[in-house]
Amino acid sequence: MKTRKVTARRAIVAAAACMIATLAAPSFAADPLPAELINVWTGAGERVMLKVLADGYDAAGGKFVNTPVPTGNNVMAMTVNRIVGGNPPTSSQFAFSRIFDDLLKKGQLADIDDVARAEGWAKVLPKEIMDGISFNGKVYLSPVDITSMNRLYYNIPVLKKAGVEKAPTDLNEDFFAALDKLKASGVIPLALGGNAGQYRWTWDAVMSAVGGKDHWLAVYVQRDPKAMKDATQRKVFETYRRLSKYIDKGSPGRAWQATTNLVISGQAGMQILGDWGKAEFVAAGKKPGVDFGCGLPGGIFVMTGDVLAFPKQKSPEAEQAQKLLAKVSMAPKIQLEFNIKHGSIPPRTDVKVAGNPDFDQCVQTAAATYGTGANVVRNSALILSPDAMGSVVDLVSEYFNTDMPTDQALDRFAAILTSGK
Image (cartoon, rainbow, N blue to C red; front, side, top):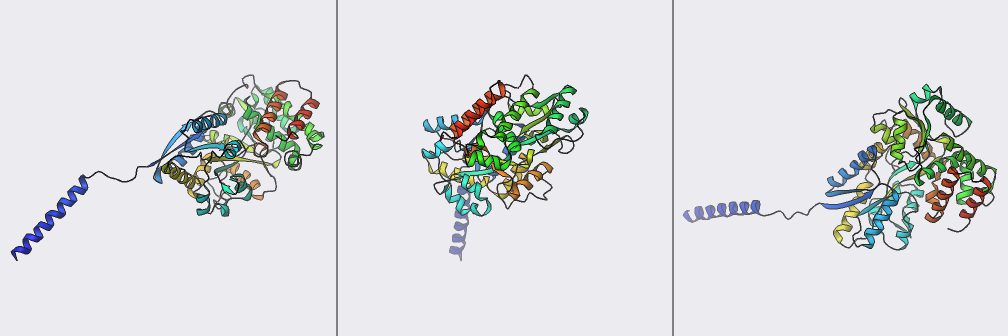
C-alpha cells in the first residue's frame, strides 16, 4: 500500500512537472504567412474595400502587407524591378487587360491552377473571365471584381440647379444640352483629368455609346478596315473631341480621385468614369438616387475589373502565401463584401447581386446589363496588345487637345489596328 502511494505521488509530481515545462516552453506554431500586395487602391472608398481583403487574409492565418502606388504603370514598374532584383512581391494588382502579357510570356508569373481547380472556379466564373485569367491552359490570375469603365456620374442637385430636370442617359444631343446648361450655371460641366488612363476610359465610353456593340466588335475584334474609317467612327472621334469644350483649365495631369471630388463637392456636374468612382461618393456620405446618379451610356457594359497576379517565388512559404491569398480573394464572403464596398460586381456568378439590398441601384443597373451578356463588350485594353493600346491612347489624347484633322486621326487609328501590334 505504501509503495502504491509513493508511486501515485511520483506520477502526480511528474505530470505537474510536465505541465509546467509545457507552459514554459516556447511555442513552435507557424508564424502568419506574410503576403504583400502592390496596388493602386488609394482612394477613400478603395481603402475601405482593400481592408476587406486584408482582414480576410489575416483571418485565414496570414499577415497582409499593403504596398500602395499611384498608378497602374507604377504597379508594373515596381513589379518588374522587384522581379529583376530578386525580391518579387507576393502579388500585384492589375486592371483586367493585357498589360501582364510580357510577364506571362517570360515565365515570370506563377500559376495558381491547383487552387482554381480545387475551388471549382470554372463552375462559378463566366467563360470570358476564365479565358482572361488563363494562359496556355492554366490559371494565373485571381479576379476580385468586375466593373464597367463607362459610367456616367452626375450630381443631382447641381443638375437641377442648372435647369436639367432629367439626367442624360446617353452621349447624344440631350447630353450636350445638359453640358451647356451646366456651363451657363457657372460650374464645370464635365470633370475630366487629363492623363492617359482617363482619356482611355472616356474614349471607350464614347466609342461604345456612339458606335454601339456591333461597331465595337467590327473595329476591335474583327479588325474591319472599312469600319475603322467609316462615318460611325468619324462621329466617335468628333463626339470625343466635342467634350473638350466642357472641361476646366485644371484638367491636365489631375488624378481621377481629385476629379471625382469636383462632382462630389458640387464644383462639377458630370463625369465619365468606371464603377470604382462610386466608392468615392459613398465614402463622402453621398447617397445614390439622392445626391448623385449613374448610368451606362448607350446601355453598353464595357467590361473591365481587377485581378491579382503572382510573380514566381523562391521559397515554399512565399508560394503558400500566394495560394492562400488567391483562395481568400475568391471566397464568396470576401467577394460579396469587397464588391459591396467597391460598388462593383462580384466575378463569381453564385454571389447574389440582383435583389440584394446591399447593392444599390447603380450596381443593380450594371449587373442587369452584365447578366444578360447581350450588351457586354471587353474593354479595349483587354483586346489590344499593350503596344497598340498605348498608341491608341497617344492618338486620342493628341486629338482631344489639338486641332488634328479628323481624317488624319482616322488614318492613324486604322494604321494602329492593322499593324499587327
